[in-house]
Image 1: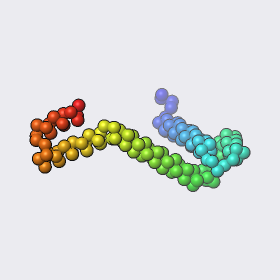
Image 2: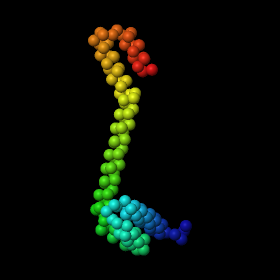
Image 3: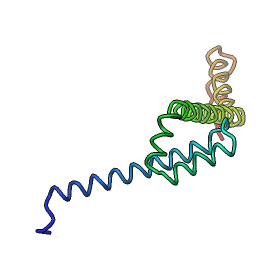
Image 4: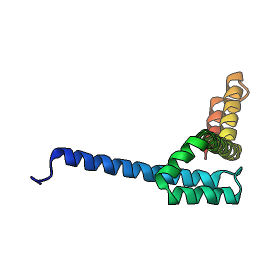
Length: 134
């Protein structure tokens, strides 16, 4: 380790960081290519060959030429994913709520209202509540 100065270690780590960063960008570009529905197959193949044959230049040119639309596609995917998740949660809450949760809450509220009005006595309320929660 004595013949490997600290500056060389720093440069090695920097090179490794840029190498990993480039792989990240390469995978991001390839993923974006296949996600884009506006490009036909030949255009996708051309970009892919360009990115593979001239990797650094290809990724750089792709980011310059298609960077804005790449961001728009990412935002659209995130928005669609969030909308699908919200729809799933709404459907799950409605199906579960109508089966158990919300209907019990509504029934308990009605029982409490009947007890408060004096239509049922506290013992009847407790029995109905226990029956409902069982």
